[in-house]
Image (spheres, rainbow, N blue to C red):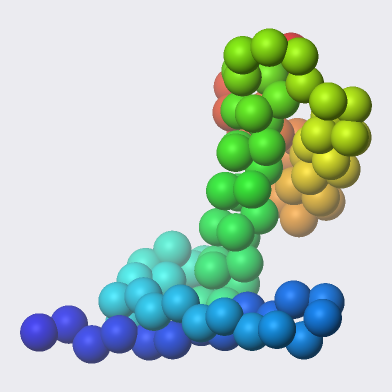
Length: 94
């Protein structure tokens, strides 16, 4: 049986949530010398960027301006973290 390891995320108000992952799974995606928490955070950034992009650019109907602004900021945060734009990473742009 595979053990799990717990990661804790804290929001700006001090609320916390934990998530369990199979032990060692984040380590499978680390680069040499990188901590597994960095991979967990990378995947959070990646997931929010992809989901935000999908809602804004591939959703049906008009997108409220505040969502577009949030998506723009998320794409900027993605690029700051990974050194490449989201459109480059995804292989398409709008």
